[in-house]
Length: 121
Image (cartoon, rainbow, N blue to C red):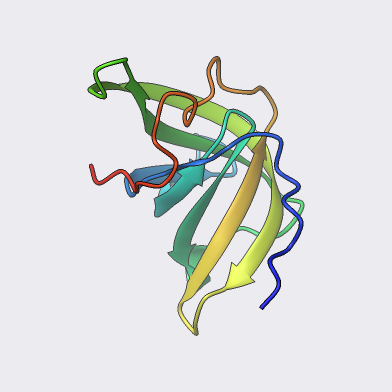
């Protein structure tokens, strides 16, 4: 099987951690599960009945591990507005959501991390 052309400008940090989202934070927040993140966007899963729609603007709240040279980390907390780029159906009850941030994170989450390893935190 041929691999597709990689169009990403930046590696993504893969990890599983809660993410909260809503149209705005005045509404009830919905919980999802982070799949991966880069400075410009993120992908997470959520239940189909709570899923935003493509093109919708949402606000997300999430934590990202910041690694140091010794491969230890601290969690950095962020709130980011963004636009839904894509929704993928993973099954009858689960969706994968791709969101592009309006303002990028101040660092590249995968820059100091071994890309071959999934972060289990």
